[in-house]
Length: 95
Image (cartoon, rainbow, N blue to C red; front, side):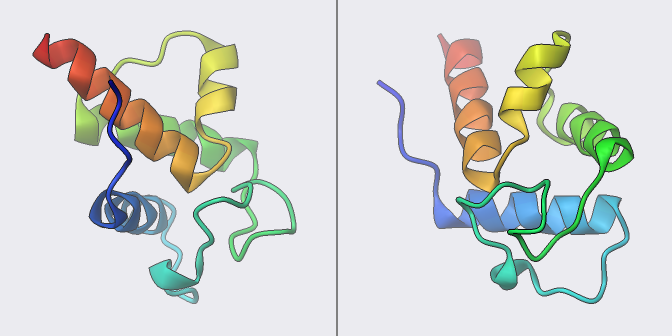
């Protein structure tokens, strides 16, 4: 049974994204967990190069592997989707 991602994990992810992409003009708390990371709806305005950097940072920081590009695209659509993926990968590794 998958746990709900904690607010701390979500904040950690936001900080990691902002540090990875050198975003200094937005507070992590201003990034909506549910809104798409890519597109004008969110405080962040990210592009495909940013996506690659985020995936590399996730793999480095959380020890997860994301080999399939379509999974990667799905996984990084929001802070919530990233947090859920990290938790599910951690649960798999703990079995």
